[in-house]
Amino acid sequence: MDTLDRFSINNIRKEYLDFFRSKGHLTENSFSLIPKNDKSLLLIGAGMAPLKKYFTGAETPPCKRMATVQKCVRTGDIDNVGLTARHLTFFEMLGNFSFGDYFKKEAIQWAWELLTDVLKIDKDRLWVTVYLDDDEAEKIWHEVVGIPKERIVRLGKADNFWELEVGPSGPCSEIYYDTGADRGCGCSDCKPGCDCNRYIEIWNLVFTQFDKDEQGVYHPLPNPNIDTGMGLERVAAVLQDKPTVFDVEPLFSVVKKVSELSGVPYGSNDKKDISMKIICDHSRAATFMIGDGIIPSNEGRGYVLRRLLRRAARHGRLLGIKDIFLHELCDKVIENSKGAYPELGEKKDYIKKVIKLEEERFRETIDSGMDILKSYI
Ligand code: SER
Image 1: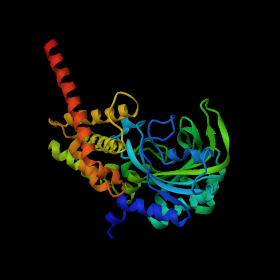
Image 2: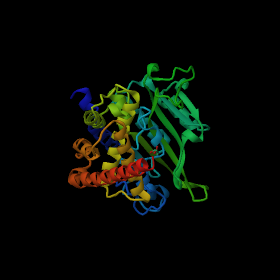
Image 3: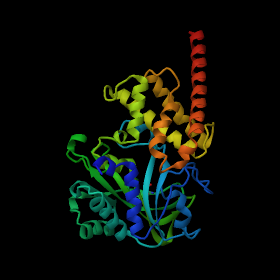
Image 4: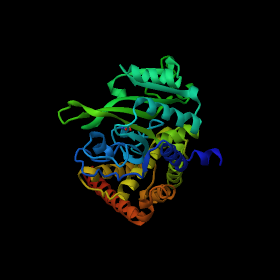
């Protein structure tokens, strides 16, 4: 197997699940992007979200150790998509979870083993962060794993405490990959926590110890748990030595298709590249959302979908694409992902139809708006 096949998204997904199966985890396919029996969330944005009931003890898990690859949509960082090497609204999260079973030591050791022994990432390029007062995690990273103290950074609540509006939460420890000084900002104190593209956070290990209520009060959980999340597209970019997540397949095929449809070469103009990346990300998000049964509307999840599609359509116009085009990108998205997500293959025609209708409707709205504007002028 050559490097690209070995580190393809499809193969990393498999290696991750195989590894945690060998550590006694029950592995499950991704849950839907639509939360089930959970009114506190609009969309699933983390591997732990569909498993909240097991963390809080509301339900008994089928196994105390689980691992999943979860489809996620997060729009909090939408303005960074296309601008940075790493932000996406749709991504896949590789996660291993312990419900009152193993804790910090095993979570840290296994993460290190997978990254360095199985995936063979250069140890010297890995940095870690720990929560301000988490001496225990620092000790494990330094004494058990052997990371030098200079590559362990302590960060505060904004970076190293993981929580949703309500539910399981706790301090975390993140693993970063140093992509090299030439991809960074050049500041002398550039290190994990810096906003530039040099250090890419690839894996977040959360030591889930609290259940946060609607009033923001943290209640200690009866058993400490583990919730980890690694960005699949990010780790693939690292393993394939690509500068951004958009240079990794299957994302790159979508970017190339946008370039072909617009006639704008990728890599020729920064602003145009950003538009291509935004279109790539949003069309992937829309394809998976519609595949899970979401349709464009003016509220809730449907509104998120509508915004993503319209934003992508607008960037298409900026690239000079005159016709509707977003539905054509679905083929590329689906081709490479339907093995892991069969629902995409099964609903391909439906997904394309929904996207086509929404884009047509948007174009009519814009055209009639332009007519009104012209008549005023
Ligand atoms: N819940 C954590 C995150 O989403 C780790 O999985 O980053």
